[in-house]
Length: 211
Image (cartoon, rainbow, N blue to C red; front, side):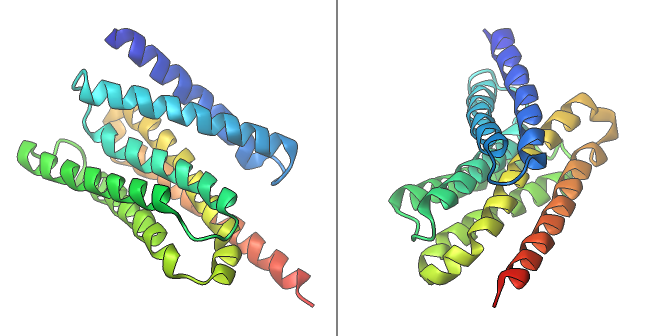
């Protein structure tokens, strides 16, 4: 059963990377972008489910729990922000954000008891990114509707790219363990660079469309 779970996890993760690349490179808002993005989200859900089974049932690679939480939550929130269309987050959004934060705190407690066996830079940067996005989402209820609408595309880009880079980081960290922490930090750095480029393009588009 563990081998079957690993096979499904690896297959879904590989397909998620392929569909994620299509979504990132396709024209934003086009059919290819939308369809590949939806498929990416479904594949991420499978990756999360099989990853949690591997950690909680078979006791394998506990660090992947926090990467799973980060990628899964970013994917969920990145889709939700589009569907909310500037509306305030509801009880579902806030409940999941709190649950993810509690799970991350438990993970920190666990690794302090067990001792760090992954690079501290990777652990703390991953947990820090997780708390950053969940804290932002909890604070969104206090923002004005106008601000939430303006931030919508920026949030979607940041969260979906972060979900992709998180899965890529887990993949490279597992396939190239001898190059850690760089095999995990590099995908995150590349994802951040891509986010900055898209943010600049979105900002320029808004300047050009202003009267």
